[in-house]
Length: 613
Image 1 (cartoon, rainbow, N blue to C red):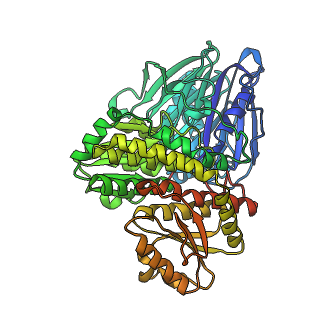
Image 2: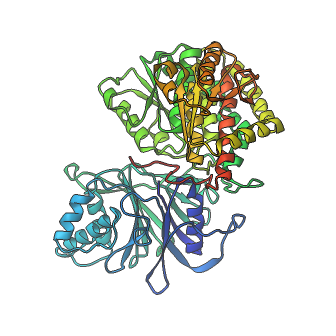
Image 3: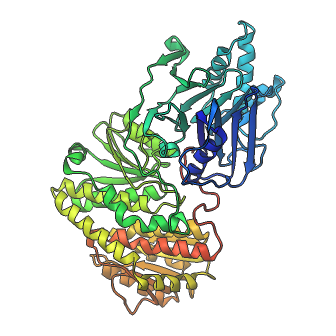
């Protein structure tokens, strides 16, 4: 949700900022804005509703100018206030001396706004972000009453105002007079990059500038930077401390580090959409995610064996990946593992302990609810592992054991390749715990080949199109899974509802007799995921029950059955069957979404990185 980008250097600032925003589009947004300084010491502000204009993604460098150029940019996903040009970021100060953009939610904005309004401050937008701007103005005026005006006063005012905000917030400020960018993070992510040409980039994630440098400076909560374009792009790093701990502002040494370069290409290649491109990348990405050697897992393996209980935590698609990994941990490794939703942990606060292990699953590594779950286990002295797809993310930095999905950028808001990468990683971990690491690697190689063959199959795509044609005039669908495929039923249903906007619901097949079957009417499409495992007979029995009541049945299975009105053929991969069983749902979601005229890469109301609760 929302994306922040900043730049200081000798290239055209507005063009660099727009390119940075394009690389943040996957986070989801409904409006955007760019603020840059002009030679005449003014700030130029451009804000729009809708899509960021396209640029040539093959162009690596823009024109070099004689002077430094500096600016900030933002993509907004509306929370407080409608989708309007006025509500878009950045927001100007009353005297136009600075512009500010924010990622997060000011939880106490109503109290602050009322206080400022009573004091005579005027608001022009509906956003909680503008409250920060007016609060900085008040703090600045307060400082001026006791000091002479100088350029450090604005910095002090920003820090003072930031300390009064409640919730997870990151801000970036462009100051006109000092020609500086001042940025502070708390909860919402912010990473700084520095190129060989001494250009400085700030972004909500490393991907935003990964095409320009892999030299990064990571910021912790309540840390920030000052970037001065006047002094050859000088950068200072600082931390904010509570007043009871002495000095409120402490300056810190600046230490950039070289990080693992990720696949920074953000283009569709030969494909019409990012979604279909990313679906087809899965044979490679499950191998990239499991390219670790056995030694890489040794510490986590010992921690999992020693843990009183292992908690697998995620939200959305990542929650279903966590559920699948927990199944592997229990079934293959005989580890007591429990899957939890990051946003439903209040009843576990007193249960977590120092002998527990949490494995957090997230694509971005910045999911607010999952981070809160991680903080809970750490506060109780427990151990934390994470699997994310973004270098320098908050979750990975909090973790004792950090792992990366290594799938490259996943631009489509609806996750596909990150999901299968993470469950492949979980399978490798579970098998490694039992001493079968080499066998697991061989099985994953075979699974990759089977996935490739499946994706290349003309028969598969014909079967998918038949199911899509069946679905066009229907509104309610059910997906049944059990055991190995329960999480896949939930994820498969989620994927199609995200892209088609139709009501797809995943259920445990065992729930049919306990109420779910009341929803089945004549011609209701019901999908059954039937693998060659101990649940096969039960799954076929459930399929017979819904067919008897008039349902149109669709079987996702290695072989056809007379109970299936429609059949989608998938290979038999044993414990790795979930990797291929989810692919038909991904393809149905894509094809159905396209036929319905939906934006498959940016479905309505959804954001890729949910950094606020």
